[in-house]
Amino acid sequence: MQQTARTIAIAGHSGYKEPVISALASGIQPLKLAAIEAAGRLKLLTDDCLADLLQDQDWSVRVTTLEVLIGPHNPKADWTGSPILTHVTSLLDDPKCAEAAAVALGELANPDCDAVDALSSMASNHEDPLCREAAVASLGSLGAGRAAVLAGLDDIANIRRRATVALSNFDGPDIDQALIRASQDRDPQVRQLAEDLLREV
Image (tube, rainbow, N blue to C red; front, side, top):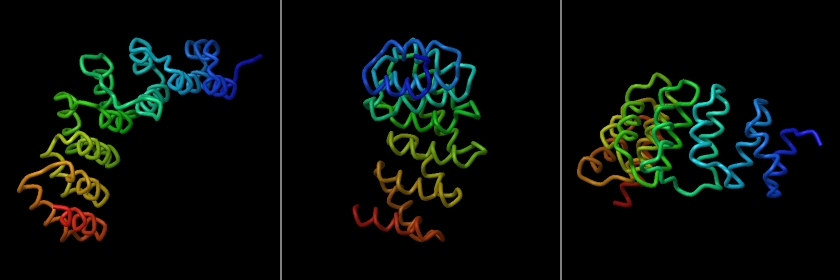
């Protein structure tokens, strides 16, 4: 039977590994993308395989791999000492993959200094607001990059909202003061989020 993206997806749900492995090695983009998702479901993605996929020439392969890394079939990521962490962090500099890479790093089981520094730089300096927002959210999830999260309170409304939520994972007088300031923000959603968090203090 001729392989299609649909047959690969079905194989991933049925536990039929052979067509998934074959499609994963193929140079046919639709089959490869379907195979990455199916292989994630079947736990077939070794570190070596992931490293290759994260360096694939096709940006859609790289993004799909990042999405599978943090998908429902993968637990909180522990990439300590793994080349996967280096590859994902390096994709923060990839215009096509930066947002997805930032989201993936937010799922780390243990914050990594290099990843936190890279996310902090993205949160403060990236020209794309979606990337800054993703970086702020991931720093909040990690409970790291405090200064960059606080700086997000001076960005556009979407990022101020994300930064306000992220503050819930930090403690200290500076956080309390930041929430008080956010409770007076010109954006009503920021104000509401800050007020809700202040009631929990």
